Amino acid sequence: MGAKQTTAAKKQLPDLSRSCLDHAPLPIAAVEGANHIVSYVNPAFSRAMDKPAEQLVGRPFYEMLPEMDDCVTLLDRVFRTGIPESCMEQEHSEHRPFFWSYTMWPVLADKRTAGVMIQVTETAQFHEKTLAMNEALIIGSVRQHELTEAADLSNTQLQKEITERKKAEGEIRRLNSELEQRVAERTTELQAANEEMEAFSYSVAHDLRAPLRHVMAFVELLQKDVGPSLSEINYEHLTTISRASKRMGDLIDDLLAFSRVGRAEMQKTECDLNQLVQETLRDFQADTKERKIVWEIHPLPAVRADYALLRLVLVNLISNAVKFTGNRTAAKIEIGCAPGEKNETVIFIRDNGAGFDPEYAEKLFGVFQRLHSRDEFEGTGIGLANVQRIIKRHGGRVWAEGVVNSGATFYFSIPKQNGDTNGHRH
Image 1 (cartoon, rainbow, N blue to C red):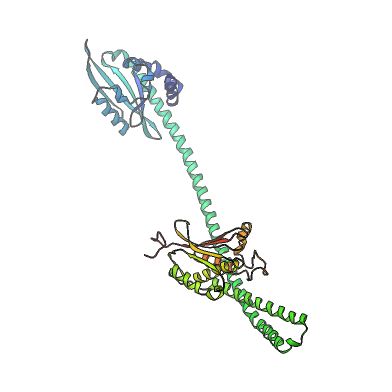
Image 2 (cartoon, rainbow, N blue to C red):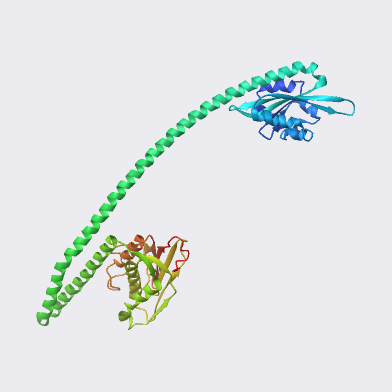
């Protein structure tokens, strides 16, 4: 405690001032803050209190005084107003009555009262200690001047730092403004480029349809007219041309559908997924009536989405499940809800079909990306790209999990509306 008191005193008082106060015959103490915590006492004060300095420093000053002592009120007033004041109190002892005189003056920091210096005088000894008291007051005035100069210097430095910080903040605002403008420009450019690309794709796909129809028509005429007279190898060539033309036709149709998905305006309504799934499954009855497929359909919630586009998502995903379970003697396809983020509804479609290598899961949703050869499973490689595009337009996400020869699960999410906590119809 002695070391702490010495350190605190050094922080508050320069060596010369502290030396003078240490040797002053009158009791002198310094307090800090509105709670008047004692930060320094000189030896004379310790003797007057009959306690060592380490038992006084760090304690509120009022703990050293009798209950309801007027000195506390005076101390509060000096701290609040910054005006020096004095008071005198009578105390009776066993031998004789004597008086205590308190003189208090503020200690300023940054032009505000940070604490109070307190000088205590026993009135009976006042005359012989007048000189010492005057010296202590002079030291207090010197210290006040030093604190004022230090505060002025600190204020100057602080003002400089504030000016530099404001300049830096202005530069940051300017850079942010430029960045926002550049982002807006790049976004506009990208949107225009995407629109041009979609228009180009639509135009190319549309223009390819007419010549392709001619090719397919003439191949069909050749097969009817001269087919029987052709050699087996030449007839096979015509068959290959016919198959390739049909595949190209399917590809063009899918490209046009993919382009329309990006251009069509969405009409969001409340969609009952239970009803929508049942409607979609009816489209597959003709293709699956000869197959053994176990359908496991769990209760599904209502979501807010574009009905036609959401139906296209289900058609593509269910079609994939039907297609990739084609080699299973007992196929199983499951549709239900999966856990997701708080503000989304997640739907999954799971099958026990061919599956895929999970290392290439990200490629599934790219245009023309296929993880199986066309000889194994038919398709153009655009269906899942359409799924991703539709779900992203709804503000959701799409992903897949799979293992080779152990099936696959495809997930998509639809954002919930405000106030909808479970995704079900209210």
